[in-house]
Image (cartoon, rainbow, N blue to C red):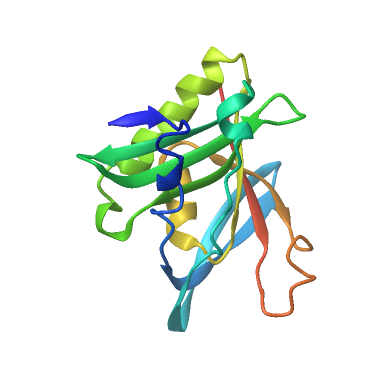
Length: 173
């Protein structure tokens, strides 16, 4: 069951944020105006967890922002955080699924909910950013018909421990 976040279920927002395995990195290439990628596998995989993202009341009160939470019975197993972006796309700021429910269609269901919301609000598509080391996320977006639109080698360069590139994925209606 996917429902819109409100003041009563707002406490469930941070529950799906869990670590993921970093097993390699995406190597993007741009040729003939088309992005493609290969995967470099790491000899020593490691786990990474993003810092918990604080949610604010504006995602309940403002029309150009929304969070959808996915529940199984009374347990929140996934979330997607979306807002309007300056370029006419709806920006997926975050998507997370608990470990035990990954690769079971929860993420795709959340993306489909985001697509419906973006179409209802007259956006031209969806955009999101992930890191090149989040290979499983990159595969997930590609499987769901997102395409690479840009790569940013400087976005994380101010963080000495982050040896990552930002990859921007687009889904155009």
